[in-house]
Length: 505
Image 1 (cartoon, rainbow, N blue to C red):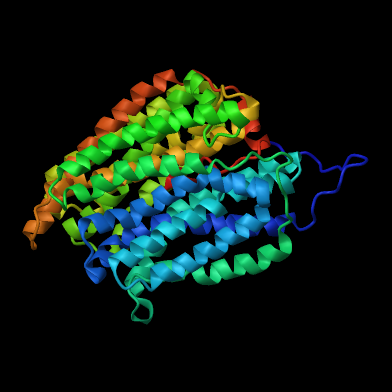
Image 2: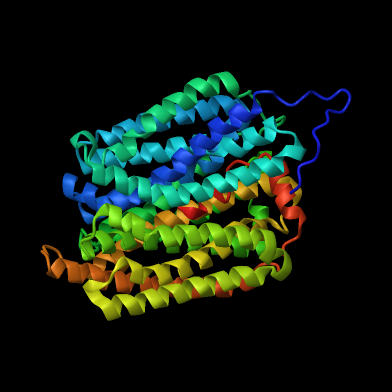
């Protein structure tokens, strides 16, 4: 998008002179949130050894954050509209910083899981305000440049998170081991609060919808009823109550849908705008987002465990091994949005799913062929191929999903897209107990444990490849070529959350 000369029409207020300082502050907070997710993955084996965490605790350290984030996203955006985006943003940053301190000083797995849940909830207050503050602070002719910067920050976070996590873990600063990956947020968070109070201007929606607290409770209950038995099932030998609770989650979800319909008729302020699902491309796009989130939830956790426990690599070596993947994602994302999708439309996203599946199959062949003797450089090719495929999907997917959504619903649709991605991520992390830990026997010691983790990785990756094929097929329901107005509609709406931001997590 080309920036136009900035001219202030007669009678219009001049742009806020502090807007670029405000942008730096909110972008820093978004970067902190993004890095905090990717930084944790590479430190999971160290956390497991230090706290003697169980398999289910490992899953909840990551899934708890994603679940709390997903559950609170739309509500967080509404709170900003009602009570002021600056106020809610600062509350979110403060809470996120406090939660980071609790994570850093956690004495046991239970405390760390609880702190991660709090972190996710605070991120749900903080992150949705970022684009809303940008929308309220910057004139339309400058937003193209701003969203370009936002994309660069996302790419930088994807590349730097695993490396930063690996370095902080390996350096063992002050003998703290993995804890600095959380404690590093403290000075950043304090600076964001102090500077945000001074440089961010307050704004509210002219007519904010009411909070749908009952809808939030029903949605969170349904998700917990599905994910909790999945994560604890293997540890408890799959008790009958677990299957009954998972089946009951479908009942609660059905109650949620009925309530949202009634809420729409009563006051027009539901948590989820169900009429959006009458748009074929949106419904299909939500299915793609959900399943793609499942893929990412499974892959990143089992990949980390495979390299550090299965292969016995250090956190730094594992972090450096992932660089080709992150770089390929960033490169392909830029190419897909700027050049490929405008010309080839939906085919680019479908090609991305097939390319990513191809990379997974090549990785599977190498893991089987080289066994525990595989080297980082041998992983570079399949990881780069997988990264290229992911980049072709994540950047243009939001526009494809929004392309046929009415302009007046673009904001709520964007927030729902992001929430569903996080919900899929949490579900994928829950499924790790089935597709990965379910293949690992209890009480193993090296070298049997190394072999078991390597075999479990191969088993889980076949699941990833299969889901990518399903995603390819579902993408046929997306529009052949997204309308050009979709991106502008999303930008001009009061967006409750940056729909593409978490895609690289």
